[in-house]
Image (cartoon, rainbow, N blue to C red; front, side):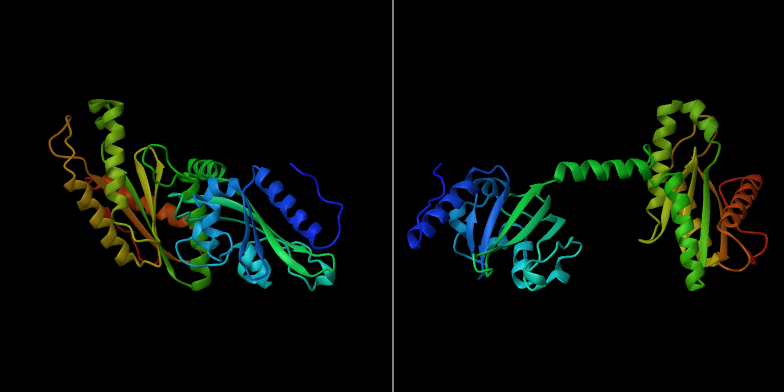
Length: 328
């Protein structure tokens, strides 16, 4: 690799540009450079490998966005050129140069479509302005890091923290957090919040008769049946053992009862056979509704739904039960 020239004038400028180009090509980090008209000046080999787009296709053009997105949108380098910091959020703006009048450096992490690479990637991007000797903006350089593997590992860890390993439903921790959040939201908006406690009838006997593998399969199928009746903003969780909990935001007791009956019928229609008794696997459901702020608390909602579930069991199972009074 040649070293920077000590000559002056146009010849030196050409030599310096060539040296910078060689330097960029040698980097293992994906880099591209835009001129002040947002045309690609440099698109290094690592950038080719990341995007699947050869340099000759983009050099001298403003089509660099096509390497990252299906539909046109600015890259971070474009935002630096335009000085539109607000459009880069959640970027972390750096200190601007030249007394705050020049475009700031920006950083961001986001998912990119990567059309030519044929796969979505989670990229960390940093874009910085380049100034000439007179302090005038001459180009913007953007560097990229592929953090997809790290991001997927993070997502997997988050799912482990909030998901039940057997059924894939929300776990007890997620249920507790969601109930608390929905209770506070209901309090602010003075809306009803309903809760269903769903328990698989005679599950211990079922587990004894069919073995643990059979019991696990039963729970997974019941979980899918319950989840199939949910709205987008509802939450179904494995509360513990063979018991499931369903949070129904902004749902009246009458509406909760309708959902509960649909769940009961859906599970019965699975026709999961029981070796120890005639018939099929069924569930009992207790429902409760509260208006947040009416001198009650989320824990009381759970207690009321639990009591209703106990009554459903006591009355013969395979049924729903509502609170003794609707004042709850």
